[in-house]
Length: 83
Image (cartoon, rainbow, N blue to C red; front, side, top):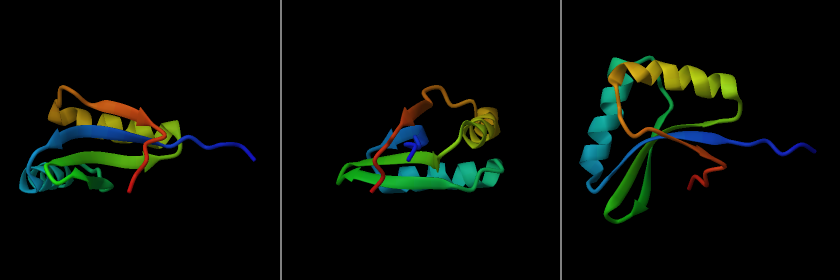
Protein backbone atom coordinates (compact mmCIF):
# COMPACT_ATOMS: atom_id res chain seq x y z
CA UNK A 1 0.00 0.00 0.00
CA UNK A 2 1.32 3.41 -0.90
CA UNK A 3 1.32 6.07 1.79
CA UNK A 4 -0.65 9.08 0.66
CA UNK A 5 0.56 12.40 1.95
CA UNK A 6 -2.00 14.94 2.94
CA UNK A 7 -1.43 18.66 3.07
CA UNK A 8 -3.17 21.69 4.47
CA UNK A 9 -2.75 25.34 3.59
CA UNK A 10 -2.42 27.24 6.85
CA UNK A 11 -3.83 30.73 6.49
CA UNK A 12 -3.31 32.08 10.00
CA UNK A 13 -3.59 31.41 13.73
CA UNK A 14 -5.81 33.61 15.88
CA UNK A 15 -6.28 34.17 19.62
CA UNK A 16 -10.04 34.61 19.30
CA UNK A 17 -12.52 32.25 17.67
CA UNK A 18 -14.58 35.14 16.26
CA UNK A 19 -11.45 36.46 14.47
CA UNK A 20 -10.88 33.02 12.95
CA UNK A 21 -14.56 32.83 11.94
CA UNK A 22 -14.35 36.27 10.28
CA UNK A 23 -11.31 35.16 8.27
CA UNK A 24 -13.03 31.92 7.27
CA UNK A 25 -16.14 33.81 6.16
CA UNK A 26 -14.04 36.27 4.16
CA UNK A 27 -12.32 33.46 2.27
CA UNK A 28 -15.66 31.79 1.49
CA UNK A 29 -17.18 35.07 0.27
CA UNK A 30 -14.24 36.45 -1.74
CA UNK A 31 -12.85 33.27 -3.32
CA UNK A 32 -14.19 30.08 -4.92
CA UNK A 33 -12.61 28.07 -2.07
CA UNK A 34 -15.13 26.16 0.02
CA UNK A 35 -13.08 23.79 2.18
CA UNK A 36 -12.08 26.38 4.79
CA UNK A 37 -11.82 24.97 8.30
CA UNK A 38 -11.07 26.21 11.78
CA UNK A 39 -9.10 24.00 14.16
CA UNK A 40 -9.18 24.66 17.89
CA UNK A 41 -5.51 24.27 18.88
CA UNK A 42 -6.05 25.41 22.49
CA UNK A 43 -8.47 27.60 24.39
CA UNK A 44 -6.64 30.68 23.08
CA UNK A 45 -5.49 29.55 19.63
CA UNK A 46 -7.54 28.88 16.51
CA UNK A 47 -6.09 27.93 13.13
CA UNK A 48 -7.76 28.81 9.85
CA UNK A 49 -6.72 26.42 7.08
CA UNK A 50 -7.75 24.90 3.78
CA UNK A 51 -7.78 21.19 3.20
CA UNK A 52 -6.79 18.52 3.67
CA UNK A 53 -5.53 17.90 0.15
CA UNK A 54 -4.33 14.51 -1.06
CA UNK A 55 -2.93 15.60 -4.41
CA UNK A 56 -0.80 18.45 -5.62
CA UNK A 57 -3.29 19.62 -8.25
CA UNK A 58 -6.07 20.36 -5.78
CA UNK A 59 -3.54 21.95 -3.42
CA UNK A 60 -2.22 24.20 -6.18
CA UNK A 61 -5.72 25.20 -7.31
CA UNK A 62 -6.73 26.23 -3.77
CA UNK A 63 -3.45 28.10 -3.30
CA UNK A 64 -4.00 30.00 -6.56
CA UNK A 65 -7.64 30.70 -5.66
CA UNK A 66 -6.68 32.42 -2.39
CA UNK A 67 -3.69 34.31 -3.82
CA UNK A 68 -6.02 37.19 -4.76
CA UNK A 69 -6.39 37.94 -1.03
CA UNK A 70 -2.64 38.61 -0.77
CA UNK A 71 -2.09 36.89 2.58
CA UNK A 72 1.56 37.19 3.61
CA UNK A 73 2.36 34.17 5.78
CA UNK A 74 0.60 31.25 4.14
CA UNK A 75 2.19 27.88 4.96
CA UNK A 76 1.79 24.50 3.34
CA UNK A 77 1.97 21.80 6.00
CA UNK A 78 2.54 18.16 5.08
CA UNK A 79 0.84 15.32 6.96
CA UNK A 80 -0.97 17.69 9.28
CA UNK A 81 -2.87 16.00 12.07
CA UNK A 82 -6.40 17.32 11.95
CA UNK A 83 -8.61 16.82 14.95
